Image (cartoon, rainbow, N blue to C red; front, side):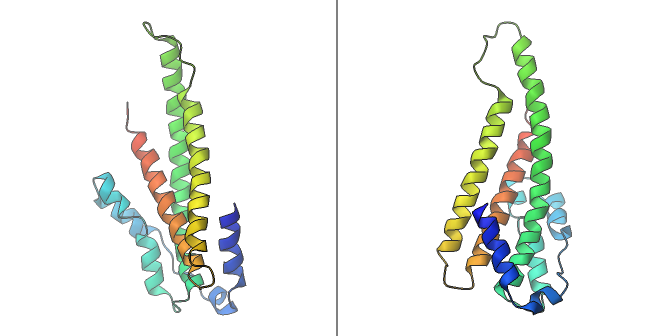
Length: 170
């Protein structure tokens, strides 16, 4: 939460010209890259494709403008991550129910649904702290906001891809 506040605060504190231009962001480059990439490793290379295309189209190369492109792509990945998480929770609930009723199994003191929720909560906390460190390493420079935004975009994209891949199991 602290990092999100930092990114928003820095973005709002930038000069007016940033807000005057229309952000040239479209998720199409990332979506096209994902369609063309058959492996998880190749799909990870797609994270940032739309943010980079947005950056190239910017009238200004100000760090806050670039961070806005990355933040827009983070929203794309966050939506995918949420959809994959919800689908994974439904799948986990089915798996838990099947396991509970299966013959020749002993009752387990854990549930996949609980583990998935715990993993996601821990991951979100880790992402916030990791990206805060990325930003703080560049404090006092104009690149703290781009470091934070890039970190959020990359880690959110990777988590979305992890959850989407997890859906393929079983």
